[in-house]
Length: 281
Image 1 (cartoon, rainbow, N blue to C red):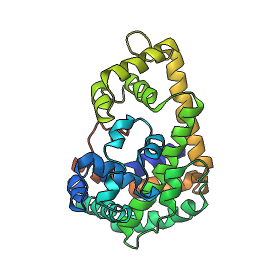
Image 2: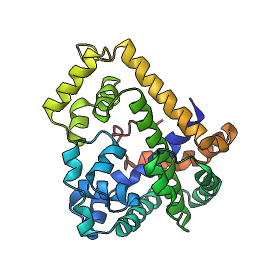
Image 3: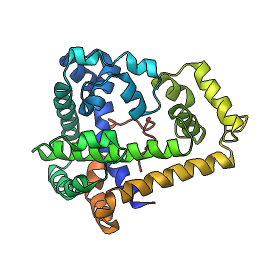
Image 4: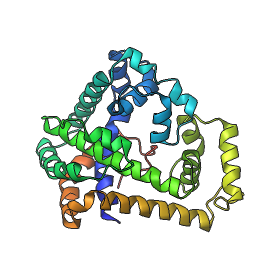
């Protein structure tokens, strides 16, 4: 496995508590937001400032635009981006502490990755750049959460760029990942806000391109395209910053994080099947 992907598999679960931890919805409501999805969009988009739906649809990729528009820009009339930033760090840090993540490990990993953030290439990576501009908290666990978040958005921005280069839209990417067996189709369609008609039309387009078979399975061409996108994502993540850690450094960080990541998975906070596509090792 590419070292960039191995490090992502350790950092992504730590970041993901901001979506799945108990209390996330309540954290949003407590500062004036309305429900889970407004909280999700406002918390994740907050580093960008009080943006409207358009930039978020583009940067997040895969969400039906009207779903985003129900949350933004209305969220900013209810809570400031600064309040969202503070709330997301607080609820995420509490979740990590609650499952027994090791604070001393957090401090060591955050300190080792901090120079990587400073040197990482932000070209074409708006979510990464916006997160990288935020101050790293003094609390070790909050610091690691912020570092993990910034690096996962760096990877995510690069992944979107790889999809665009391959001629694949956000919706089409969801269908290809469903066909690869990562997600149940109906669950993914629903949580990303797409209608059955839009989903079917995108499937027809992929069928015409020879990426999906008539039964909805990936064709060899489809599998090759997905593999190429993942390889490009790994390469861009590595060349864009993580190479400064080195392969031996990745091995060391993964081992340091292993007990904490295992505790997080064992806690049940993260669903075994989730939209990130990451499964417990």
